[in-house]
Length: 197
Image 1 (cartoon, rainbow, N blue to C red):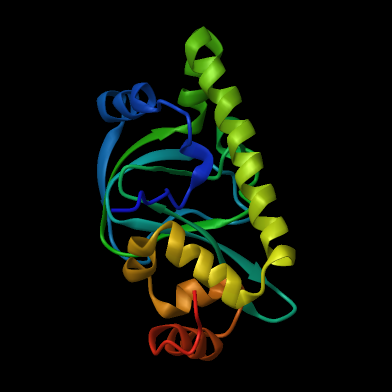
Image 2 (image 1 turned 135 degrees about the vertical axis):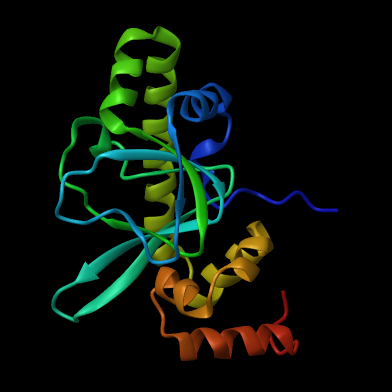
């Protein structure tokens, strides 16, 4: 059996259990319906949530095209936030919305910043999360140049096939920056063996 990597590689090498435990103990347990917004682009970012059940998507709007694009996802067992903007209430760069019914433990970003400020171990975790997030986003940006859309989709399939099954074709296409029609064509080619791995 092959080891499946996490979709969000910022967690690699990090023990975030202390942060999860803090959210569960100090946070408010909340149910969010599909389409419900956690953060809205252009407004102050305020929240950090541990996703107990469900999935969230990060969305940016292209005014010129009048179109939304998915830039990322947060799954069960992960954290969802516009990080680090939420720590100081800076303007959110993305809209974060529930992609399905979700259960979360939610705390304010300011509350988390206070924890980082008073606890040396948590301050180190904050630093490592920030570094890892940068590495993840940087690698994704470079992948748009290193791989074609087909290559990026095949890479996603290899790394975390469970994610591909969990998300809609439309959201995956948006994340890969292709049309759903083109992604459907890629999927058919791969499924029917016209594309050799």
